[in-house]
Image (tube, rainbow, N blue to C red; front, top):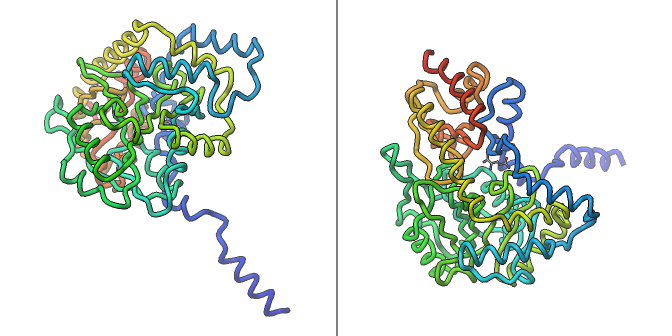
Length: 405
Ligand code: GLN
């Protein structure tokens, strides 16, 4: 008996209460920087959420839905009004025909949409190709789903006005028999790259050759600059049947806290995503889905103003950063700017952003959080410019102290 107890105790001591999966990733640095911004009363140019109000008509639609007693579960894969609106706008914006009954799943934000998709399609040992720098969720998302991320480099432009590019041979070398999917994000967070038709066709050809799925996060679809065109991956010949398109309300309607996103995928894949989504969350907030249906009906002028508003903010922040000593990689889309911090002589990006938030009063995201190998991002820092002019001007004022340092 004594021996048995000792063995049981030993076994108990060895047993970890934690899943091995979570040891392979850290907490989100983006969200951590927001907490630090609050702690040090810094201007938050770290996490990408607008600090200005959401459109009045979108808020009113949500209020009406709540007052109208749309307060119980929506259909688990999404309220019919919202799915119909998504299908209608997919046709208008991208010329893609989507069946709202069998090809759309509304989720709790595009964050859940991506993880539900990966859980629905990946088996242990599958590989997922991801361009880096990447939005920091994709790495943990792949690990949670049991897949192994395989990173392909996006190289920063040589000049401030150049484009981020990738090496075709490096991308091809990442594809093989175990490759299940490629995760794409265009317009891209954090680089601001908007993938060109030529690049997407190359990716398409590899997906077809290796029978690989494209999981494409197009949440910044409407935020493009300088005449750049957003091309939806599913609109390319031969791609609709092997593409899961992820999108949502957060960035287009400035409602990041609502958590309404969706997937568009062929029926068989949608079926699998719906099962995962149902058991994970049952459904996204019902009244906010009704507001989503109304929001998707906003006129084309709304989307033009959205992009133009962000272009003005980009063109306000970039010269400020450049005159402070940052080398900026001019974004063509989304609302972030990646910068090179070599001129400041800090040992790395984390010591720099710590100094910036504590001593200068501006929060930014260290570049290493967008790379699998932190060293690759050690000279980079990301700023978000989805903020009021007042906020950007206050940041500009504070950054002057960095210049004088
Ligand atoms: N997409 C935003 C960013 O990159 C916010 C992400 C989040 O915190 N959910 O900052």
